[in-house]
Amino acid sequence: MVTNVNTSDLVSDVLVVGSGIAGLSFALKIADFAQVVLITKKEKAESNTNYAQSGIAAVLSPSDSFETHVKDTLDCGNGLSKKAVVEKVVREGPERIRELLELGVEFSRTASGKLDLGREGGHSKRRVVHVKDLTGREIEDALLNAVAKTPSIKLFENQIAINLAMKHNQCLGCYALDTEDSAVKNFGAKITVLATGGIGRIYLHTTNPEIATGDGIAMAYRAGATIMNMEFTQFHPTYLFHPKEESFLISEALRGEGAVLRDKNGRQFMIDYDPMKELAPRDIVARAIDQELKKSGDNCVLLDISQKDSRFVRSRFPGIHEKCLSFGIDITKNPIPVVPAAHYCCGGVKATIAGETDIANLLAIGETACTGLHGANRLASNSLLEALVCSHHAAKRCKELLKKKPRLQSFAPWEPGNAVDTDEAVVITQNRDEIRRLMWNYVGIVRSNKRLTRAKKRISLMQEEINQYYWDFAITADLIELRNMASVAELIIDSAISRKESRGIHYSLDYPQKLPTAQDTLLKKH
Ligand code: SIN
Picture 1 (cartoon, rainbow, N blue to C red):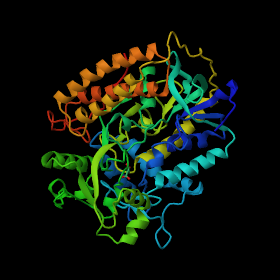
Picture 2: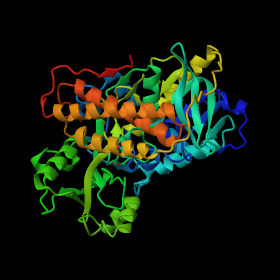
Picture 3: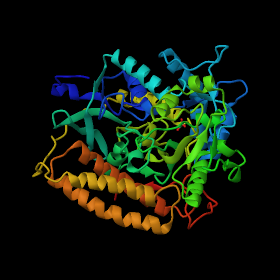
């Protein structure tokens, strides 16, 4: 972390907000051309990427083809994926994987030395490169090592972005709160890149870490960017159900290697829902589990890989094996209790494959952006791939923009107004818990008009309370996150209300059919 910051350190050619795979890869790609400042709200390795278990989907075997990966992605996307985007992302996969190998990521290999390719739901072929079940952590480490060796990138930890600084639909950088010294700083830049990851924490049950509060999406919305397809929250079918664990994912790769889902009586229920059974796309598996739980009144189902050779299970899934063992579950012998949980935001800031938004000098990449790749449902392991391909193109676009010599423009310091220190922080905890519960109960896997209307009423009231609180009290990290969570929750609710059909991961009891034409949901602040 950079210490003893002086104010000239805070201005740069390019400001990157977020330190997951998208932000770090982008920073490395632009660093030979520009001075980069990268800010991250906690420690640098704390990102969604760090927790990604399975891997990156790419066509790397002779028995696979670009056409099949494109088809699987489009099938999963349910008519909303943009074919041109899908083709470009898929075709560039192998090249981006090669770059990670050059950076030192040691992907798992077969006995003959070839890349070991895993299989996951919705994929018709084995095509997921991985580092056992710790892929995200290994990639994050490799990227952070490379960043540490790159003098033109300055990385600041514990800086939580508050708002974008705007002038006539042009982004000039952002205000961020330094959570160590409670000062608000101006990070000025010619180009600003949002790579703040996802939104999982607005749901009660999620596989995402605490940082996933939708900050980039909320900031871009406030600044006037178009936000797209927010109703498509992807629920991962299998997250560890245990009272002492908050967000531990049980990778789909287990099902790819033969794990089966059973109810508490041992019945394999997926055959009742889809011919691909456990390897059906995630929306189908998540909804099937939800339905089984509603029918039985049980609080979880069971995922069983104990029929596989125990040495294989231990060496292929060391992270999951160790974590479950710490709770007394030996996955080589016993099934794992699982439930679905919010996992990935298929919507986001409307952006091209090169990250361009409808705000000048503002790019958005990774989970923060919505490029049209995932459509109404993301194919497993396509997100790290998207982050790599889009950060590559965003860096190229950024070079072009910098060649036009945009001016660095200063902006007014943060205006605290009459805000005083809070004496009622309980308002923050109360609203945070309420949003998470509300989203889980009313805007979850299965939606209805009644539930969405209830959610809309409550979130509007909460928004009023939060906004009042925001103006009255001194800014804190918790308050910034709460304000963003409420905005993102409202964007999801509004998008879900406006979709009068069921498509992909948006399922409505009132509109169970798919409309003949697929249309994006676009929201913009008035
Ligand atoms: C998993 O390991 O099941 C998650 C993969 C993904 O979300 O792409």
